[in-house]
Image 1 (tube, rainbow, N blue to C red):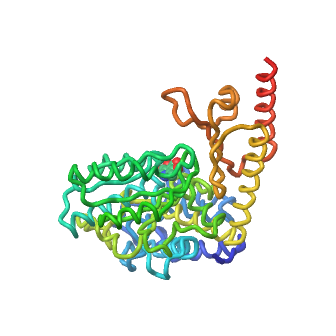
Image 2: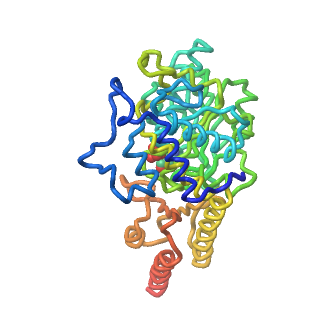
Image 3: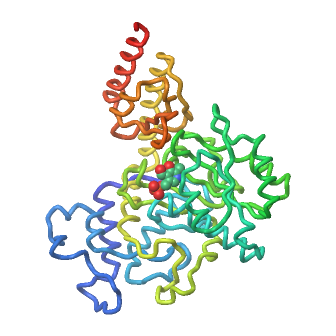
Length: 416
Ligand SMILES: Cc1ncc(COP(=O)(O)O)c(C=O)c1O
């Protein structure tokens, strides 16, 4: 990874050029589009603070990036300037961060990990229907019990069978001894085609699912499958902190990847990314979207071009080196937290390349966990785990304050 950073002025210039290339509602006659600038009374287009604010400028210009722009230049021509930046962004993520071959991936800026995950499942479901003559009830989705609920949501929406795989409670890896039994049962129930979703990383534990064991098993069983990687959380961390990551397009097993900007990249909500190898998007072409030039392939339909611009801006602002340095710094803080927990004998789970530390609930008082807004594994029953995510705002002083309170509570417990 070695994309270069741009200066703030270079970023501004590039976005301004893109906006100038878009059809301007003031200067050219645009009569048929059901869109315009953001409301002029509410959003002042001449506000001085907009001058150096490319994201806000784009937000107000309000380009619609409906469709998928990596499949040829057929999309709405009046937004071609900012669509080009989205294309650059998809290529940068697919090729630089996720090691894909040049020009061999498609993708778009989705609303988030949920949409990107369901988009993948939708594509593979239709692929099996079209290419194998499958019916939805012959398609199963394999995923670990630690997987984000968006996959269960997708199974419900797409009416495909959910096949939940238990994990080993220490390693948080799929329990392969039970996998055989679960897949066997699914086959008995008529499941012939599999969509495998593996995590990089899971929401609660930050665990990263191994790819090869499950792939080898499915190969041995001569089962038909496609692999999607849910990197909604880890997508902008793990490739930078683990140079040996296999969760990318250099691995022929991987077909598609979801990533969220609005987690680690600190972009606004509504900024996820869906990436997939070329040759698959067309399985979700909505032919009925005849009035959209180039058709639509996404779940969301209309979407703000500003969301693509802001992810691109962030990546350009840091460059590969700058972003790696930022992730390394987060890792140092996470390691500091773990060292202090070790010293206190507190049990937790952590993947060494991820900034999530998940503490056994019975090892710290819940009063402290609640005070510091730790996230529980469940709010429907007494929790078993409390999660800390070392985000940008989680500085040493906050960690120290938390650790001090835990230390004091342990001391009091010991003395009473
Ligand atoms: C692993 C994982 N996948 C998917 C999602 C869903 O992402 P979003 O909330 O952006 O839809 C999350 C959110 O926490 C996540 O952690």
